[in-house]
Length: 380
Image (cartoon, rainbow, N blue to C red; front, side):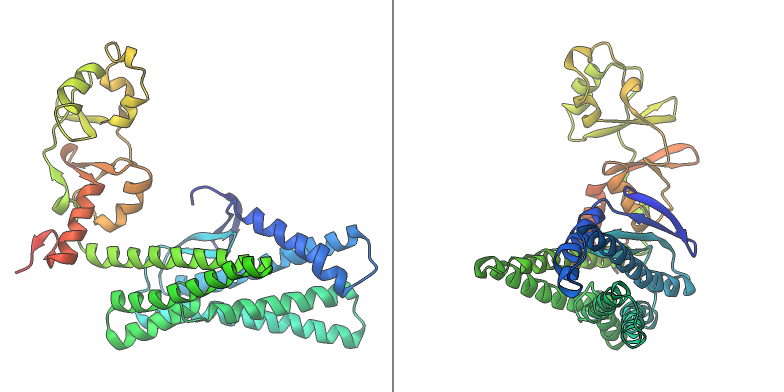
């Protein structure tokens, strides 16, 4: 997993903290320590309130982690790879490598999260009621009540039928089961998810004008859900459209190449200014050395163009910028976008056979979506 702080592994799943997590962690501690607990347990010192606030906040995020672990364990049971679990400002997310293969598996994966939160909330509320009868410390009772309440609330909220909430995934699995069409089911569930997001944003903005500033949190969550719904729907469309499409079917074959021994000035004059490409494979004696990009040239002072060779500033051949024509396009999309700056060298049997760019992928998507093409060629 890129970025964040790695905490270790639980049940084989790598756990990490997104940097945004510290914002919500500090906010929850502040609210609990200076607003909630002073009202429920009056008369204590500030240090005592902060201590119980920190402990309760840690247990709360432990509950969020438990929720995500249940998703991940069910996914792994059905052979779906989990890249890891990340805690972030809006809770947690299990980084699933692929969509569930059937609506039944999706239903089980989705519903287990909210149910686990509700069950965990029931356990904490049970501790609270038992503590009141048995005379537990007010610290334990108050923390248990808060954790019980928030876990039940988390479970119920996640059961809302808007994608990508768990309830939205449950709803999608049901629509998918009856229609047999994952893209259509995702579109319907994402549409409901957007509706819920807009309602939350409306209440959040309304809170600003009515003086209820605490409602701004609704707007932030709504904005997050809106973006997530759009992003995940797009990913499903891409997956379905590009399913089975190989790199060799949509790449640009036999690209123009640059010799590593020419100067950067010559490369600019003879290649970058004459053609529309913003990157060229660097090849010498049929051996692919790397790739020269417009971006790498822009980072070089113009005065050095005449004395610097292409081979000195090119991106050398590495797994991040190289692919094979027999690889499925969807499998390398994340690498193409994040690590390869939108273009990859296509090499087979040590020979350069093409170059794959984001433009090639977008063309393939447009053709297959709007012209009914299969694998980049017109359907029969």
